Structures are given as C-alpha cells and as structure tokens.
Length: 174
Image (cartoon, rainbow, N blue to C red; front, side, top):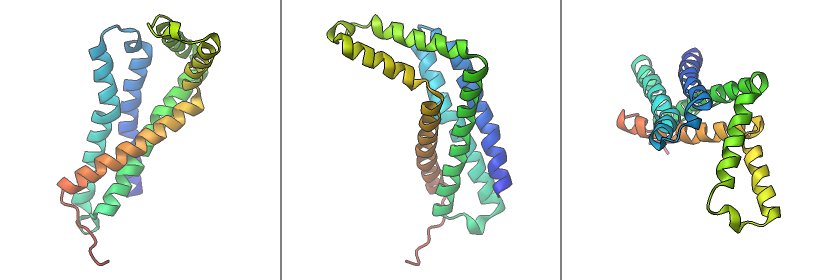
C-alpha cells in the first residue's frame, strides 16, 4: 500500500507542481482575476482531490476489508502531505536555480501593496514591516510550512468526505 501511496502522491504532486510552476511564470502577472481563481482552485482542490479520490477508490477495490474511515482519513492525509511536499520541492528548486522568477513575483506583490489605496494609511515603520512580511512570505521555509499545512487540511477534509460517500466502515467496537 505504501508503494501505491507514494506513486499516487508523486503523480498528482507533479501535476499540482506543474500548475504551481505555470502560475509562477505566467498567471501571476495576469490582471484577469478568473485566471488566478481557476489556477488557485485547481492547485488547491481539484487536482489533489482527484488524486485522493482515485487513490481511495483503488484502496477500496484492492482492500475492501481494510476500508475503514479512520484509515481512509489517515491515508488521504498522508497522500495530500506528499502532494504538498512536491509543490514545495518545486518552489525550492525554482528559488535556488531561477531566483529571478521569485524576485519578480515579490516585486509584483510589493508594487501592488504600494499602489493600494490603503498604503497611505500606514506609517513608515508599518510600511517597512509590511514589506518585510511580503518578502518573508516567499521564503522557502515559509512556503514549505504553508504547503504542508494546506496539504494536511485538504487531505483530512477531502478524504473524510470521500470516505463518507464511499461508505467506509466505521469501527463501532468502542
């Protein structure tokens, strides 16, 4: 089972990482909000959700006696963590070998902050603090932690929903 978990995690992690890369190099500069929304939902829910569903369906088919809700939620959680780690590894790679992409994105976010209507409401010290927060948001460690937390939350939620609708058994001995 762990081999299948790794295969599904890496396959759908690669697909999710590809969406993240497309976002980094092109969509982030687009003024169209719908492109950002479609990419965000695809990367956060659709592709990992399809991966979790297909993995759980395969798990139910191969091990119907082990298809219990607790195990389903745990396996979906681990699968989603692997997917999130794949995206984080892509970000780490881009940050190391093509830092210009990340620098352009940070500059875009800083310029967006400076041109917002709320910019004039901040003091100079607060502005510098906000700019540092933007820079820190694209640190490799911050992105890694963010992807793991997103992955964990996504995996717990989606696998619980899929397990419920796929009629996973519940251990009622307690």
